[in-house]
Amino acid sequence: MAIGLEQSWLEVLSGEFDKPYMADLKKFLKEEKDAGHKTFPKNADIFNAFNITPFDKVEVVILGQDPYHGEQQAHGLSFSVQKGITIPPSLRNIYKELATDIPGFTIPNHGDLTEWAKQGVLLLNASLTVRAGMPGSHQKKGWETFTDNMIKTISDKKEGIVFILWGSFAQAKAELIDQNKHHIIKSPHPSPFSADRGFFGSKPFSETNEILVKEGKKPIDWQIH
Image (cartoon, rainbow, N blue to C red; front, side, top):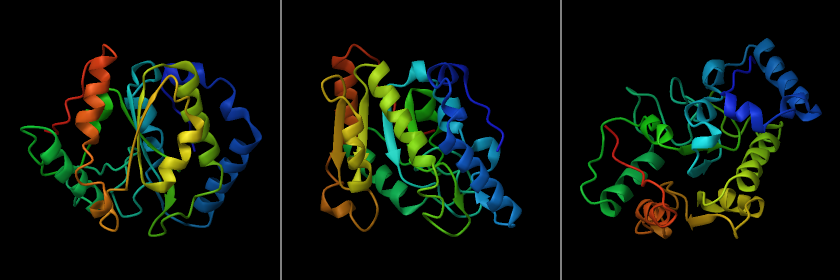
């Protein structure tokens, strides 16, 4: 696993990659490769969320759990899939909510959310890799320690960030966030199993923009082209 990380993140994460848990994680990932297991996303995309959204540009964090485990789906951004790949059910529901929440939003024909990331939306998964066809297979190997540290670093070093936490897994991360400095938006997960229990109609995107404007920041253009 070659680590190529955007400079502003390297500066705030000084020493993180030298910690013992990271050595264990690298060892695990090498063992997966040596055993012939295919993992997603490809190495060059593992840190895409950080490389597309520099630390000093982060305004919103949308937290996911695992990368997608299907061929050519994951590319390092939570909930996002590469162009040309079928839009997954959770993202379809996100688009449905956007269509009712943001006036004029048109549901796109692809699931690549890079445009959000470039505007300061950190699309962060708790685990940054997964074995093909095996959701959750790289959990509790060290990635959560890394991404928890990322969330805490954002909380400690920035102000007025909007954290969007969908579902119980993401909402458990609220304890890492200083709620006196930041804003947390919670709802059920957009998965087909839970979207009807309160995700639909929760209006997280317009609420995010209202907060950003109150903070004197530029609202997110949620329209995907």
